[in-house]
Length: 173
Image (cartoon, rainbow, N blue to C red):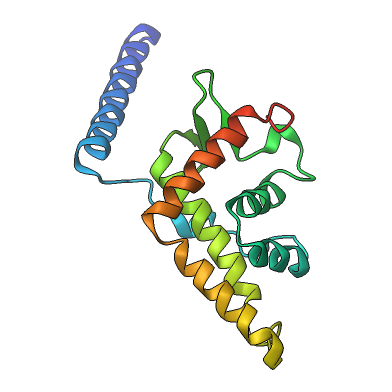
């Protein structure tokens, strides 16, 4: 029969093995640009909970600040602070909640946020909302803006502004 001390020793060994495994995964992710947590489909928002008019207004502004405001509305407005899916760490980095734990992976976070914004914009930029000839120019302008969001320059500006706003916005966090 196994004693409590023997069970505790075995449990400590298992915990240590799990820590080493996690360290190896982190090493592989960082050094080989592989992301084992890449599950964008799990965190894509299907129902934005925002009136289409607000999404259209953000899209038509064509400004990064409006894109970030849309993220605020989706994830933070009318949500209890303890349930926020992102938080600021003590060293001013942004963590996000996914698969029942906190993650610190900037590339995944920003890729996901941009995908959410683009999907929200694509959901409203259609012929139902822009079916009149006088609105066709705005529809095409919106399409150009959505396409621009795939460019590295836009991504860099988005990340810079997102960090500045969310790290400095003490009311939010």
